[in-house]
Each structure stands twice: as structure tokens, then as C-alpha cells.
Image (cartoon, rainbow, N blue to C red; front, side, top):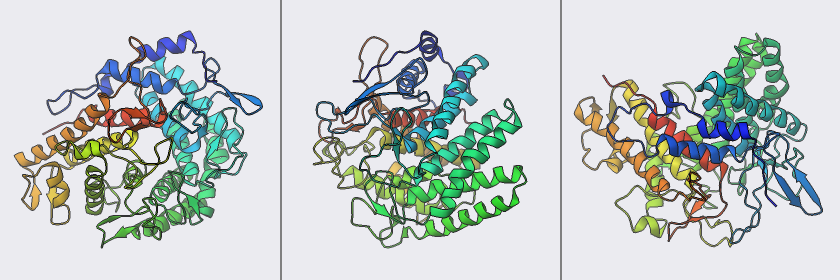
Length: 483
């Protein structure tokens, strides 16, 4: 039911691809990164195994027909009604695909000329696939591997997809702007990016489903965060094309989204909530989607209300970690460790029987990425401000912190070290779960981690999970100058 043919050249490329200068620069602090260079190579290979090309083809039997993948299709997971898994993940989700190709953009930007040639083919395949997908209603969440829309019953629309796709397309255009004709860059922007941005402009306040495909509401923190980022970046692109009308429209809607996002702060609860009106339904209140929204929707502005180090964000991360520390037996039995993270408290999705939810690989890696990114931000500004609003966050990573005020001395570097250590602990817990199918074919990861046994469960080889691990490691291993 699931098979592939990986071309020899691509296979050798995936084995040998090397970005040593960026990914494995020596950390400013002395601990070795959780994953070695060779281990990261295997994780990258596992990710690329889920991307269709002309040589690497997926074949899926679906009811009375055979679906043959189109280049650029990105398999969410090869799992399809496997033993102990009741779902079909052999689809191209717009959200997952955009996040995956955003990772490929990063690899392209930090590769050699030889490697870029192969990576560029993935980017071009993705553009062509999504160009065909945009023929359908833009809020469609997922597509068959041949590029046709999935027409069965599903949670639709999902309005985070167009925003994330627009962000990824603009990142691709940014990387190719010096090598591709200006006319081509402009064409992709107006033919594809503007189509998604205009959709956001018209529908950002409509009812849609959240990223977990469960809650239908007008207000989703994650969706608004990525919509806002898409419009801000898109406005800047419009300005470069002297399109001041679109520039102003996109900026205005982005400002409206910023104001709307502020309404998600719940002072009584002490954290940002995923929705506004469904706070007691399927995690509509406290939800890891807040963290993901901050990571994927971050904008380049030091004074942004939703920056990594903003007090309300810190308080929300504190609340999330506290909740998950007590949510699962595997965390309650190891309270001395940083907890494995799930989607939201009282989640029941386990991939099979819908009884009790579990920690996820991607959400746990996201918390590690957050800690690394926060450490980098603090190092860049050269100080940390601890106040009564964020004190609990800092005591969560280091109970010895009691001082309120600006910290620039040795305690500052202790905080940085502790943030990195928190991330390392999370990634080491993930690393210990990696499965080997053969020699040099290791670090395969499923979607979830069993809440009691700690073994992998649910969909196997989840593409988004690999993206989350790679992104966390990229933040961990970038060189940080300490003065």
C-alpha cells in the first residue's frame, strides 16, 4: 500500500548532505548538542523520505482507485490504518507541507552550491504542487498525493494553511530572488502569494477549525498569529513592487489581528487562551498551539507584544509546562525532569481508540526550540529582566532565582545555561526514543509518546515531528557570541 523508489543521486545526497558551518558550530556553553551531526543526517533523511519527487514515488490504494503521487506532495506520515492506528495520514496537509518546506528553505540557505541544486528542485516541486492546489477553495486542509482535493468529510475550512503557505512561498522567493528572473519572482508573488493573502484579508474573522482540526471558532490564537505574520511579510513584498494599495491593506488587517490577539489574554487564568468563547472545550483555553503560534508567527520586531520574552508569553509557557507536568504518568513519575508536552490537558486523541491523549514529539521539541530561541534573544540583548510577572517562569527553570530587576552578571549566564539545559533535556528524552530499522537507519519517530510506558505510538515517521526536531537543533547549534 505504501512504497517508494528513491533515486540513487538523491539517496547519496541525503546521506552526504552537510551544513557543518551552521548546524554544528560550537555552542557558547560547554554541553555537547543532544544530537550529533550523523544523527541529524538520519533525521533529515527520514524527513526527505516523505517528500515526493519524480524518482521518489508514493502509491496509495484508495477505495477503487490507485493514487500516484505528484512531485511536491508531502506525506504527513506513511501510516494508513496500521495495527493500533485507526487513521489515514497518507495525505498532503497544507499546514504540514508549508512547515516542512520552510525547513527545506532553511537548508537551502545554508548549503553548498552542489547541494542547493538538489534542494532547489524540492522547492520548485512544492511550488508547482501548491499552484495546482490553489485551484480549489483555499481553506481546504488536505489534498490527495496526486494533487486533487480530498472531498470526504473533514474539518473545514482551516485558515492557518493559506497563511503558512504564503509565508513559505515568500521565504522561497527571498532565497531565489538573486538567482531567478525578477519577472518570475513577481509572477509567483502575484499568482500565488497574493491569492493567499487576499483570502486572509477577506476571511480572517470567519469561523474555521484550529490546527488540531477539532474546534470550530472565529478566534484561534495560532491561526491569527500566522495570518498576521503572512500579512506583515506580504505587505513588505508589495512595497518592493510599488504596490502601495496592497501594502496598506495588508498592514491594516495585520494591525486588526494584533488587536484581536490581545483579547486572548485571560488575566484571571494567567495565560493566553487558544479560543475566546470555548475555554472549556477540547483545550480551547490552555493549549500548546499558543507556543507554536509564537514560534511560527514571530515577527522581526523587538517591541512586538507577542515576542518570545514578553511577560504574558512567559506566563503562558509557565502554565503550559505546569499543566503537562501533572497530565501524564510518565511526567508525574519523573517530576525532576522537564515534562514531555502534549497538545492540551484532557486530550483524548491517541491515534487509535480516542481514550487518553499522550505527549507528542513535535510539541516537546517545540518547547526545546522555545528555550533555545529565548536564550539567543537574551544573549543578543545582553541582559534579563526578572519581575513579579515573570518570576515563576524563571524559577521554573532555576528555583534559585529570587532577584527582581535587570540581571547582567554571572546569574545572567546561569539563566542562559539553564535555558539551554532545559532544551537539551527535552531533546535527549526524544533522542532516547529513536527507533532503528537497520544499521545507519535510525532515529525514526512516531507522532506520540505513550503517556505511561514512554514508548512511541500513533502515526509513524511523522514529517512535522522531524521538522520540529531539526528546527530545535538549528537554534541549539547556531554560534552565539558571548562578550
